Amino acid sequence: MTRPLHRMLTVGHWLLVLAWLSCVHPNLVNITVDDYYRDPLTNTSWVTYTPPASWKLSLGTPCDNCTARPDASYVYYLTWHEGVYDADSASDMYASLNFEGVAVYVYCIIPRSTSAPDGNVDMRFILDGQEVGSYSRPPNGTDTYEYNVPVYVNKSLSAGNHVIELHNGKVGGNQSTVLLDYITYTRDTAVEPVPSNFTEPIWPPGSGGLSPQSRSAKNANIIPIAIGCSVGFISLVIITAIVWPRLSSLLKRRRRLPPSAQYLQSVGGDGDRGESGWAAGAPATTGAAAVSTSGLVERTSSTSESGAPQAGPGPSTLAARNAGAIGVEEVAR
Image (cartoon, rainbow, N blue to C red; front, top):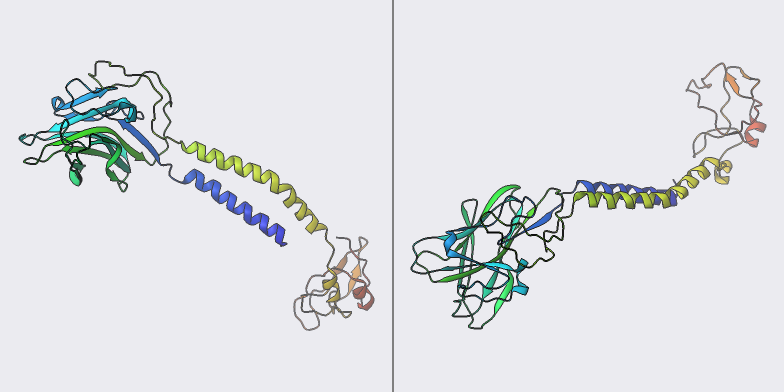
């Protein structure tokens, strides 16, 4: 096989492999669930708050009885939930979300002030009934907020349904303020994308139909598996259209090429077997041979004088015809 032909076949092989991988590799997609609106993928789940009266919702602007005053333009979908755990409280307060996926990320706004609000942050995280982590951060005394802070990250979940809970404060502990912004989870299956722009958000039941400013949803980065397969297939078609004419030309050329000069020089006049294989003229046989009307040799015996099986005739050459005992017309290949 010539080197250009080998190179093109190798390139074609890897293109097929890449196209196959683009279709079979799991398509990981991130789904972002706002603290207030429904899951944009399932439309059936949302973040729930326990006890409901302990959590305060802000839509676009801080609620009237909220102590935290973050800049809404830095907040996902202009909404957040504020929960303040009282050190004297004997009850637990938490936010939870049901989801199906292989990873989960919880994002909060972190207040840094020491008062109004008290910026002390003390959270615990429970996944499927098991405590899996915590996040604590004391205030630094500045009247600022930090946005899009990942307070809990888990990238090694088994595929399936899970429940993540954010618990604010510890029984008998210090006061703690939580400003929940959004939760993102990762799926490993192809899903249909929701529209990237919509005018009416999807509210949880019992929300009263409050309508904040409509905006483009910075929603989940949902990339259907069909996109990967389509790109791989189109790339393969384009490369094939470029490579195939040259590949076909090389294959036809190889069929038309005459024996090389080196091959002809290796053929001896006596028709014996050379180092490169059987010579052009076949060794003489003990049986009679006759020439048919078509110019092809009809053999009546297929064994040589030594009794070994007779090899088939090789390419005819002038030297073989002059030295051989059989006069055979050269057969055009």
